Length: 126
Image (cartoon, rainbow, N blue to C red):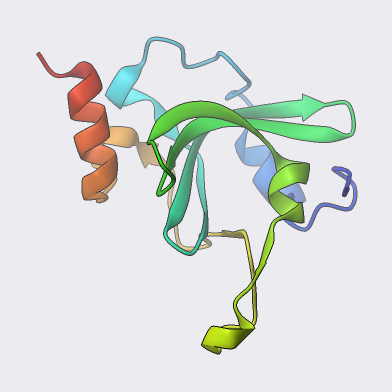
């Protein structure tokens, strides 16, 4: 498994974005929590709010969508970097988790993802 020194998902610039957004730093912020970065593979999206180095790994905290259930959770950067799906028979080659390089940090409520907004409304709206 890749370490933080070898992980293709962890650039120095990307790690710097999490300064001030260590794990548990946005507890209770709900829809006003700052989303720092987004990763995806196929229809699966991870909206990461917090993260910090943990030994030879980097642990993210955020919302994952596109799996069986949408939920908040912790994710290992090393585990994410190790995911690959052979979609060659569909003409897509090998798929890997990638960062959305166009994403600009913003509060969760400002993200234009209907599935994310429905999840947040179900959790936090009266």
